[in-house]
Structures are given as C-alpha cells and as structure tokens.
Image (cartoon, rainbow, N blue to C red; front, side):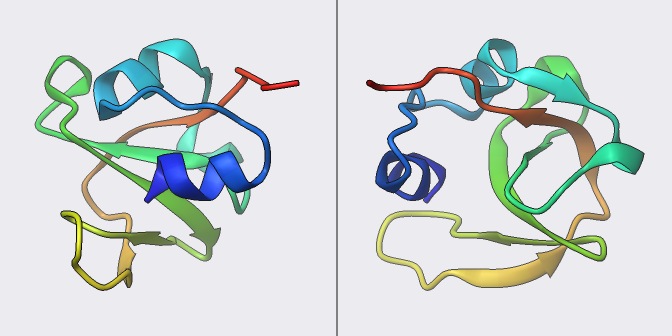
Amino acid sequence: LTMYCYAKLGIQLTHYARTQYDEGKHVKKSALMPGDLVFFGPNVEGIHHVGIYIGDGQMIDSNTTGVLVRQVATSTFVGGGLPVTIVS
C-alpha cells in the first residue's frame, strides 16, 4: 500500500517496511503529520509492518496484497518516518 500510494506522488519506496524505515527521515510520534509513514514491530530492529498516518492517532494500512485498506489506531507504533527518495 505504501509503495503504491507514494508512487502516485512520484516517490519511490523500497519493498520492505524495515528498509523504508532505514531510508527515510525519522520523526517522533508527537511530530507525525498526515502522510508520514508509521512503522510497527516488537522494536525498531524487528520492524515488520508499515502504514500511512492520517492524523488523530490513526493510520491506513493493508496487511497483505488483495486485502481491503483499513483504518486502525497506531497503538503499537515503534517509529515514524518521512520518505525522502524522490523520483524525478
């Protein structure tokens, strides 16, 4: 979902949540803005999922290909980031 949405904006993301976290600019939870990526896992080293923050502690995500996009709380958040790789 994140790769698809950001590609529509001309921003290329890598395939894996952890590499998206490593390649982006990190932001604190208190500084998240709608459109920022939010990352999940047991800790930063174990990041295994990413969603798109939409504000008010909520994000959109899709667990797997073919699953409907859903809106959920960011309660298990372990990191936030803003992609910085721009496709020209």
